[in-house]
Structure formats: structure tokens, C-alpha cells
Image (cartoon, rainbow, N blue to C red; front, side):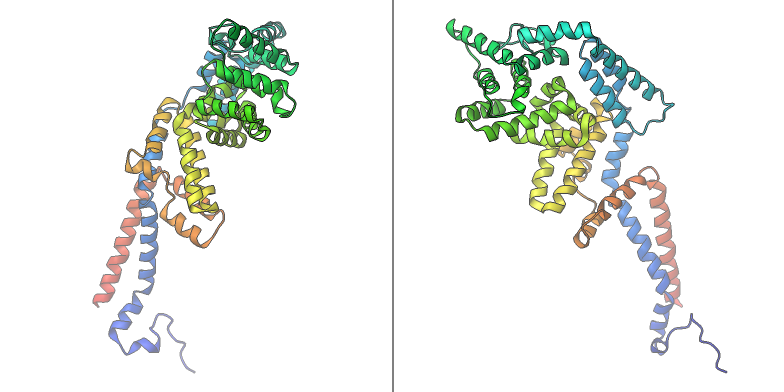
Length: 411
């Protein structure tokens, strides 16, 4: 009987050449070396992004409970509720025994209880219906803090639902005009839209939110001009789209919160970006936008532009990355806002790297459109804290395999 062939022996095609035999003996070492080098490169290429993520992780979390308590003491109950709910979402997962979870839940409940006080609600709704929310030339009060609670804004909303608010504002503007004083064309346009029936259902209350923003100086100039132009041209579609975006912001952030977010939008396109983000992420996203400031809008704008240049697949990935960065920064409050600003401005190489996908993710996307790229990014982020010793271990592994290959080739 013939003895079985030794699986470790080289095939007959290479036995005649000593050089080929030596290469044959190194085949598995070479394969392991390639694996070690590939893993080493994957972690090394993530270095700049990892440094930024670790810098953010080292910052203390924002005290959402203290902010909610401050807003509640100021009488901004709807904003206090939104802030507490945003804290619970942005700081998740929080253990039920975590004192922050209990503090946030308590502040949320206290704000809700105060918000639901019928006596205070009747008083504030009546005042809002009489005067209109917000000071400035369009209203009867010069103190903006008097009209930033949801209920006083809600009073104006109720009044506008019954046309009283729109008539009130038109009367005020007419009186100003008769006295030779400056009138506000935006207030006039919004009141006229409220009286019309062609832009329902948003026209029932969204113009009141916009009028509040206008009185408080929180309505960007380009959006004001867009409202005037659309009203003069009787462009119901343009008004409907703009009102729908404001409604989405108000739903996620409360009407008073929407008034705070409006100054972040330079124009109607920015407003639409904010609205889509708020619709997707809810109160947590709305609070993240507030904490992120102009840098958050810039990131959303840049992600959209990059997506348009790269095609549909790139746009989705870029937008998801920008949204994740905005919410991660919001968790840290003011320091996170500065961190986000460094990314939006691209002030360092590490900051610029945050907006680009990992080279391996880009390579995978070239062959496969799906969740593989996102899975790779999540896997790489999972090794942030352990990366220093994993890199060392991979380097040692590559060095060992290289030594084995050198030894076998030298025989």
C-alpha cells in the first residue's frame, strides 16, 4: 500500500525549486501577516476620528435637569418639559438607579404639573389672546420674557383660531400707520394669511408662532422676505411648505422652542433642514439643534451638499453621520457645542476627518450598498477605549509573522 501524502509537503509542481519550496512554507505566515496588517491599518486610519470622539467622551455631560429647573422657575414650562425629555433621550441608556434619570423625570413631572395648572392657564391664555405673544412693534409689550411661555403663545394661537388675533394685529398695525409710525409688513402678511382660507390647516396657528418670532427679532430676514413675497403673489404652495416646516419644529420643540430655533435658519432651505431633523429625532433632536447652534445647521447643510455630489447612497451616510455628531455634541452642552464648531469649521485635521467615512467603509460601499458600512463604523467606534493596546498587539503580531517569514525564507 502507498503511504498517504504528507499535507505539509509542497506539491510536485514546486518541489524542483528550493525558492518555491521556501515560499510554500511561508504561505500561512503570509496570510496571517496580511490579516494583521489589514486590521492594523483599519484601526490606524481611524486615529483622527478616534481622538475627536475620545475628547468628546472626556467632557462632562450637560446638566439637563438643572437647565429644566431653571426654565421651570422662569415660567417656561413647555421648554422645561422638552429639555427634561431631551436629556432622558440624549443621555440614554441611563440606569433606572442613576440619579440623573430620577432628577430628569422629577423635573419633567414638576414642569408638566405647573403647565397643567388651570388657574394659571386661564390667566395666561387670556393675556396672550388679548395682547399677542411677544413684544416689539407688533405687540403691546416691550418685555419679551413676558410672552415666551407656551400658554401665552397658546393664547394667541386660540385667538387666531377664532380670527380675533389676526384682526387684533391688523388693527394695531392700522393704528400705527394712522399715527405715521412704522408698520411691520410681515405681521400684516401673516395676519392676512390667517384671515384667508387657502392655506389651511397650518394657517390656523403657525402664523401666530411666526408673528411671535418676528416680534422677538427671531425671524431671519430671508424668511421674512419669503413670507412677504409669497403673500403678495398669493403663492399658497410656498406658504404651505414654509408653514409645514414651522409646524414640524413646533411639534418637536413646542411653539416656544420653535421660536428659539428659527434664528438658526438663514433661509427657507435651512428651515426645511431643521424641520426634517426635528421630525426624525423628536424633542431630543430639537434640543440638540438648540445646543448645537449655527454649527449644527452648517453640518446639515454640508452633509446635504456632499450627498448631492456623491449620489443618493453617499447622501444618506453623510446625513446620518452629521445627525449623530449633532446629538453626540448636545450631550455635553456648551463644551460639546465648541467641539461641534471645530468640526463644522474644519479647524484641525482630526475635525475634518470626522466628516469623512473610514477608507474601508468607502471601499465596502463601492461593492455593496447596504448596512455593512454602518456596521463597520459602529464596530470601529466600539474599540475606541481599547484601541491603544489593540494596536500594540496587532503590531506585535505583524512583527512576529514577519520574523517567521524571514526565518523560513533564510533556510
